[in-house]
Image (cartoon, rainbow, N blue to C red; front, side, top):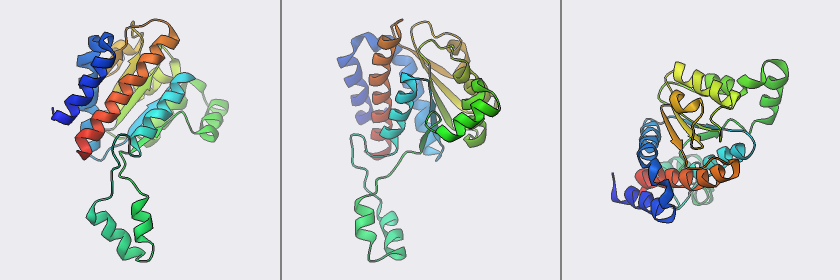
Length: 214
């Protein structure tokens, strides 16, 4: 593991020593995300309620600079320069290199139509089937580990050879044995589980950024 990546992991456990019980799963989850990113794959997220907000938060940290600015490469700047020589400076100065990511919880028109017309518990599974390909990653958040729409999304992802990263509470619920790796934070109350999820996914995002852009 690169020194810059290890530093981000160390920061997590320094600030939240109780999360050390999740170390191996966090490292495994990072491995799946890094492999996906290196293959130019897509990282998808999903969850309900507060976990839906977390799903969008993760995408926000991946699709733009998190702890680093992520300037364009010279080749990317040249592409803009060739296409729009009078605007390339501004465009390049206000673009940041992205780690492709998508929150399945944020598509109101699609999700409400699918819930109304087809099946509420398949709303995330449909998007995994539509967007995903082998080697992509689904980060599935459920404090209980038993949310039907999240569990079904994991099933479809597994069937089509995506990697699944579950983020749950201590028990893990059904996702404990369903996901490629399940990060079970040491809490049982919903709000406490969500409080632990945030530093975990912040660490994962900063580790991936460090591995990709340091």
